[in-house]
Amino acid sequence: MSVVEIPIEDVRLDGDTQARYQLDWVAVDRSFAKEADSVTHKIESHPLRDALDAESYDWLTTHAPRLLDAIEQELVQGKTPEQLRRIVQDNIGAERVGLALRIEQAARAILAQAQR
Image (cartoon, rainbow, N blue to C red; front, side, top):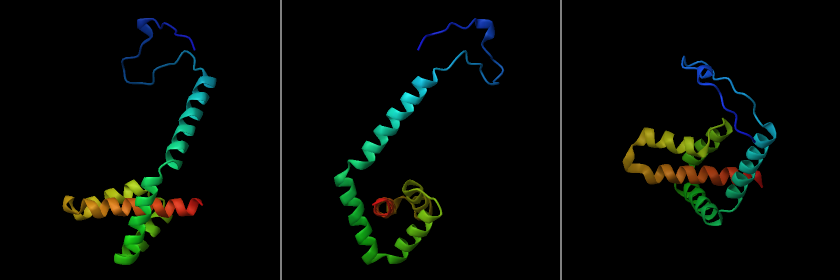
């Protein structure tokens, strides 16, 4: 990849799209591939987190099965575990952060089971 100097009079100040001289698409593809590999590795290599997620799933199965059903329905609708945590925090307040985290963990456990 090389650096190209752009004359100062060609730099846009009006907020419109800034012209690009040239993108090295091979470098961009390599960068995205490297990031994707990194993310995949991070997702697959968390045994302690996976165990905690499974514990939260088990706890909800015993103590709050209606919440577990709702989590599964939200996941089917495309919500992420993080979005579910935020929904709970927004609706029950800061004093129940533990429940919000448990719901996020259970949602991750459900998604992990679905991937197996």
